[in-house]
Length: 301
Image (cartoon, rainbow, N blue to C red; front, side, top):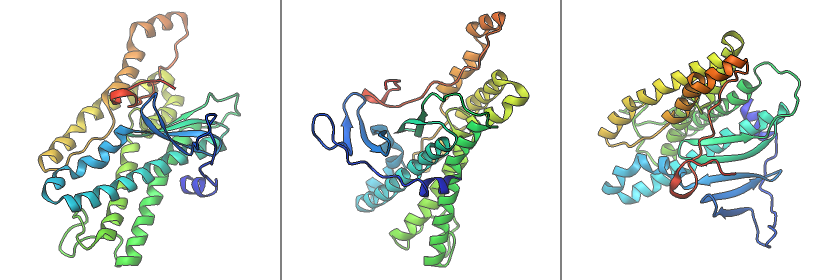
């Protein structure tokens, strides 16, 4: 679904001129401190400065040992990270369009990417619509991982480029091409695994909520996903801390705050007041955007 959605849509960057006369294919949003470009249909893509953090962190220690190699490795990983996450978000956008939902914008930030959809009009009932839209992104990462593995097999005769005496997690030392294919494969497998976790604001959270709602109801489904997200936001440090001790700095979702908002919203006083009047509605996680000055979360449009 994801790959077909990307290659059948004919995405391109529009060469449009702003009202003040300058070319707006690429620009800087001073209000939110983001780099911007536009997709067809005047859909803005905002890239926060915090998006560079996960691209640089894994190679921090290498910069002290071999700066020249660190530059090359950081550049390769940054390009792969951008392409993998950007194509992931484009798949969401295309899947939503097929189901009649428009896209407002795409944001790339510290924890990856977020696609914001326009308020959906009265649509024909579609079973598990949001689960289908959410799964389009991770499915694209799986397809990308397969493509990297296939390229590795064609070039090096192995689906996973590695050293002859190392395991599949060993960093290849046979050249930058082998490194790029290995990073591309590993990165997309990790992106698929992370995005399928049942937590907010990950795709797995949306999928789990959509699948559980018919059985548990919207309220309980949102609450279950929020509790899982809280647990996973703590358990992730079981990977982050040992990796840091080994010299590899990592930072990845799910974060605590959006999941806590959902749990608090489903169990707080406001929820009880609405329950008395019969107007109980599931409280969704607010958009988490690491944008604006200092990279703090903001909901500015």
